[in-house]
Amino acid sequence: MKSRLAPRGAGLGLVREEVIKEISVQQGWQKSTFCGSGACVEVAEVGGQFLVRDGKNPAGPVLQFTSEEWDAFISGAAAGEFSTSSPRAR
Image (cartoon, rainbow, N blue to C red):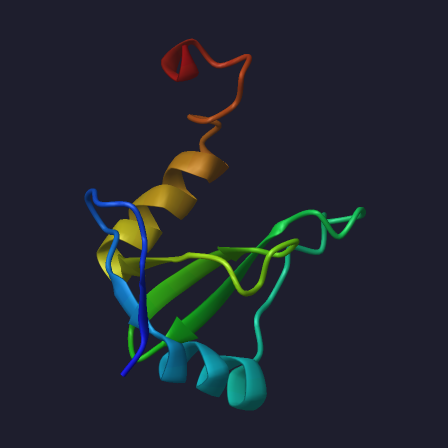
């Protein structure tokens, strides 16, 4: 069974090719409605896990996050923690 390994780190995991193909066919990947250029990340939810990939390179690596990790990221983004103008992002 062929697999792709995302870079090691917290929340990153191994995603099998078969899982990625299943998502592409059955569920689809979603982009933000703010994505105007098509050069955006795509997200899919599968079994309580959140998968993230580069929309320009759908055959590339896929990052995998738990629902707790994803919720923390979304909350931080909504609070502006990742904004380049935010003191916390520096």
